[in-house]
Length: 109
Image (cartoon, rainbow, N blue to C red; front, side, top):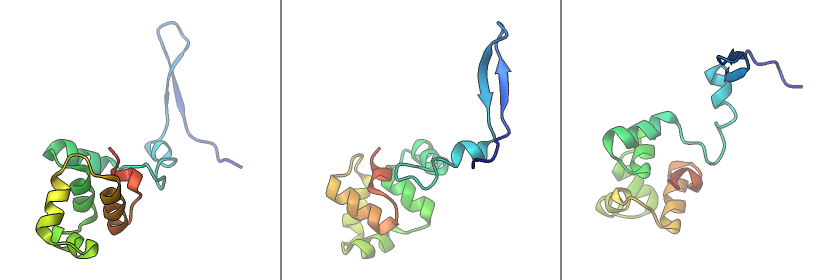
């Protein structure tokens, strides 16, 4: 059974429903935990700092480049080059996602 959600309906000038307002937690809940969900903080880091999705996720999770390099079995400079590319190859995306504990789809931007 689904619990009722506290929603608000806003009517337009014609008196017909035009918008629905729901609590933010309810809006986010269905997305969290999905294999495509990217937190707002990660997106903000990408936009505000002009970072790649891999760097934004790494920074968001508090992992250093050196730690990532160790997890991937590569040098820090090799990882830095991967992270700075705008688009990751599928194999790289899968390895980096596994090292970060996220879904590869969360790096597919």
